Length: 120
Image (cartoon, rainbow, N blue to C red; front, side, top):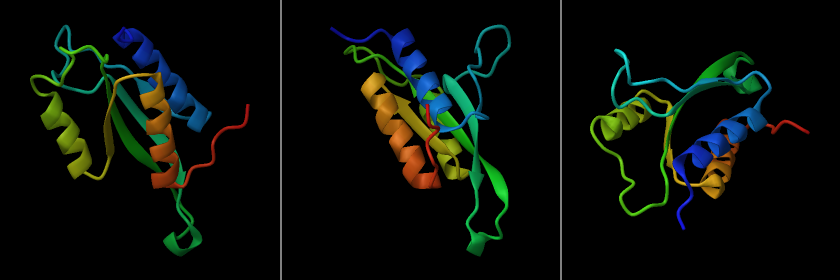
């Protein structure tokens, strides 16, 4: 049985919060004049640049689209274009299909940005 999309969304949100206590994230709405095709999750994670990169902190732009594992669950409309544009601009864009997928996404972010996970 496929995991409902709302459970995937909750798992993505939890995974992002585990990476940093000061993560900025929101879930935009395409309704009422919102931009169509924007990923379900928009986030900005603080990333500390290494010594050889001047030691400054910057924000890494994150866009995550949540889907279910159901056969008819696929990207549609402007979603592929928006994810491609985020990647082309240097951000991190991902499609997540399950709680396990959210954990994989979290590990990819840790590796890409050399993040230390928040201790619980």
